Length: 148
Image 1 (cartoon, rainbow, N blue to C red):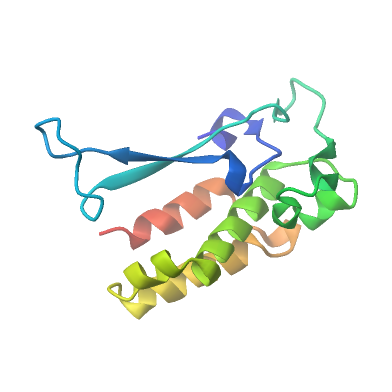
Image 2 (image 1 turned 180 degrees about the vertical axis):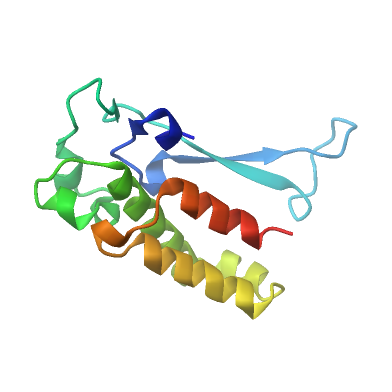
């Protein structure tokens, strides 16, 4: 959504991703976590900019220790943050989630292996060379194709 509005976030990191549980029980009682749905929201727009309206961001985010492993190589090298570097950061987060989260792995055993393979492939594509990274709309389309 941000990229469709020409907003570059510049600081896509786990600390800036917020999880919200949706209660779908209808009676106001807390929903069972195993049956609740969740959505993610991206926050902290302190380093973001709008393409063609503001100066591109060459902020110190890349030099900060917290979340530095999610920063695109071209940004670490002093380049400007772009939509592609946002995609890289989101891909690194997805890759970490796939590889490190035991809770995620426990849930994924119930999914077809093809879904897990496609998610890993998507994460790899998102973390690829800048000129070959998929657009954010392409990433969304690929994720939607995995949903039932």
